[in-house]
Length: 147
Image 1 (cartoon, helix red, strand yellow):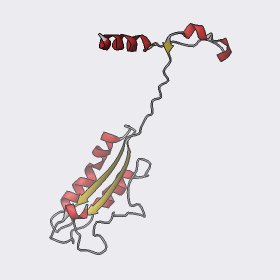
Image 2: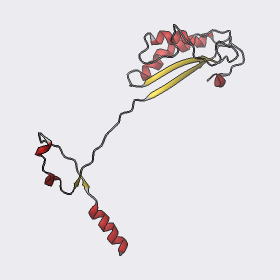
Image 3: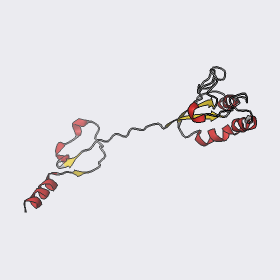
Image 4: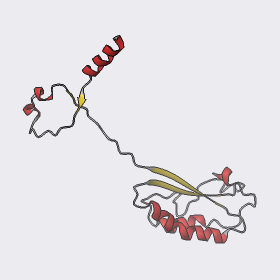
């Protein structure tokens, strides 16, 4: 019996959540008695912009020239899929060659640009240049290590 009374007491103490539109011209026009027994809940919605860091690990061993070209040529289709979505992205390119002191997992720069963003000018052209890494890399392909 005590449990039922406790539950009833909690229900009686709880308030109804209602929505209303304030047509009053100023807070002074509000009558607190109009809100007697109501709970007023303020809600804030925070919009978070989606972000993504995308890393292309490109094989630069001797047989990959055609594949590098194909990757660069098809990048516009990739960008088209995320363009206009509001996604804040960073796109970078590294090679599978971890032996070379000049590459070894470092982001590949073209014209001083190390990664691409939605605001990067000539995005598709720069990417095509970034992924054409050549074919003189190590035959020991270590993509995961480069990542």
